Structure formats: C-alpha cells, structure tokens
Length: 300
Image (cartoon, rainbow, N blue to C red; front, side, top):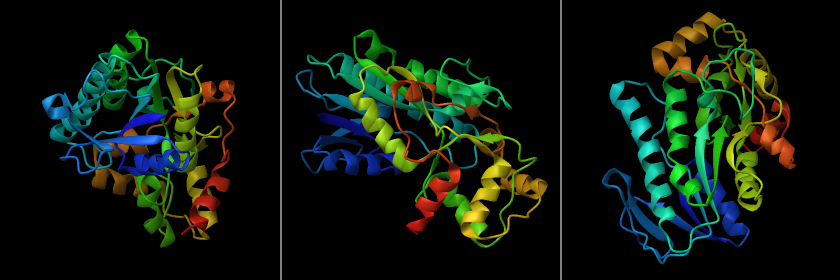
C-alpha cells in the first residue's frame, strides 16, 4: 500500500515506519519543513495547508502527530495540546475526503484519556467519555475524523494506553529513578494503569490497516491492566531494585514536577479492555506486564 503518515519521527511513528518499510509498503511522510525527498509531503496545520492535489492516490493514512502532553500544563500548553490534535486531524480528514480516489482507511490516534478517572470501572470502547480536560480533548479529537467517515472512508480512532518503551514516554522517565532504587507507588497505588508495549502498538496499527471489519474507536491496551502498585513492584522486580519510597512522597514529587498533568496521567485510574481487538482476533505479543518489561529491558 501507499501509506501517508503524520508524526513519523515520533516514538510510535518512527517504529511504525520501519515496520511498514520492512513489509514493502510505500511510506509518505507529512513534514512541516520544506520537503527534501520525494516521499515527503509538506503540511502546515496552523495555516490549514496540506500539499496534496485532488488527483493524488493514497491507500491509507495514519495520523499520529500532536503536541506532547508530557510536561507541566498551563493554559498555553493546554491550548497547544488541544489545537494540535483537533485542528490537524480535521485538516487531514477534510483533505483526504476531497481526493478523487479516496484512501481505503484513515487511522487517527486518540487516547484512553477519553474515559477520564474511572476507578475500578471496566471500560470498553462503548463506555461513556469522562469529563476532565483530556476527556474533552479526546472526544473532540475523535469527532474531527467525521468528514472522512461521512465520505465513505473507513475511519479508526486508536485509544492508546500507556505505551511502554525505554526510548520515550512514561517508562523512559521512570527508569532512571527506579534504577537508583528510589522508585515507589504513586499515591495509594490502587489506580489502574492500562499499558501496552510499543511492539504491540505498531503491529496493531499494521493489523488495523489490513482488517476491514475494524472501524470507530479501538482500545490499544494489553489484556491485563495492573494497578500502580503492581506496576511499581513488577518494574522493581525486573530491575532487581527496591521500590519502598512511600506513595505520598511519590505523589508529592510528581505534583510538584508536573502539576495538573500528574493528576490526569499518573494518578487517574483507567481499567480498560481491548474488546474490539480481542473480538477481531488480534493476538498480543505481550499479554502480561512482566513479560513485556523483561523483553523491553533485555535490549538495554
């Protein structure tokens, strides 16, 4: 297939591009700079521009770009998080809807932040959205795909959980602390973390590209979520390091460092099931946290 990708230089996008190239797909990259190769297409979402003509032929689009949420939030940062997702998604959705030969599938990133802080409630793709900042962003982010689906393009919104990789995301930030033996649970530790390995993420995207029965929201999480306490203990065991820092100290440190972001990402509880992936027959490479962490960290 000829596949157009945004966010191709990010954690997920760079690994996905390698997999798609390995599988002999033709990958086109949306870039914000002046293109230097024939597989680069410039887009300027702030100016509502993509350099595609109506006659361009693309088989699939994978949209992963968006402002990083891993930082302290103020109103300016929150606006960037929101605008980068909604504006960029709508631009791509509207543009591909106007192509003479429309792509077969439009895959757009979303997140389990859609559900908000839900305690021990089991969450599937049919669960109602939450009512906090990230939940509102995710809801509007997914709505921005409507023009594509309204024009007959199979549209899939991937609700990513906590993606585990030593090269970026939450795990990369945790590893230096835990390797020093200064890791510990956050708060009471009973909040659920719905995780997924980066390796499964890229194979899930490849699977969704090829599985015509999948459309709408899809939870991209492993089948066995864990509490923060379980995550902490498992990571400590794999690293052979103690994890005895009291929860209130961990919560205080993250609140000081990250402010409101820590409440939304690190202290919120989301017990999410990958119902649609399971029903469609996807086989996870890593179903348990310990097997995932041992494999991931064996490469370090």
